[in-house]
Length: 124
Figure 1 (cartoon, rainbow, N blue to C red):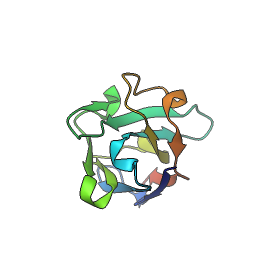
Figure 2 (cartoon, one colour):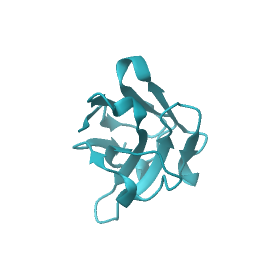
Figure 3 (cartoon, one colour):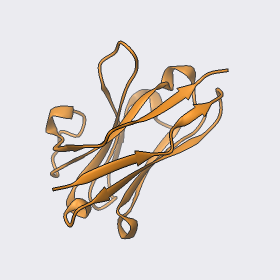
Figure 4 (cartoon, rainbow, N blue to C red):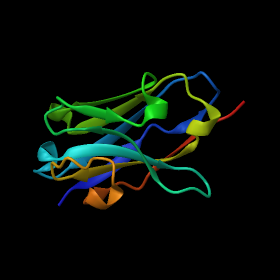
């Protein structure tokens, strides 16, 4: 069983930065690939980024490439999402999720465990 807790959300202005954290508990968390998803009001939840269990492979939604960076600290059982140059259309609830290693990193159905989400609002 894996338990995930996100933190780091908030209200920022366009162009600002935020770092989201996803703290994982459970003995097997370090063996899971971890993803970030987001859901804006009235929209479907969408994939944002994924990092494999070893930290060797990273995948991103096209619209966040070059602005967001996913990383993990295995010693701390934590996965981060560093977000730079934030835009109003990044406003959403951000969720982290864990999955058994698989090639399908973008489908939420492939993820077994989810956090409760953290709100990110980008506005003047």
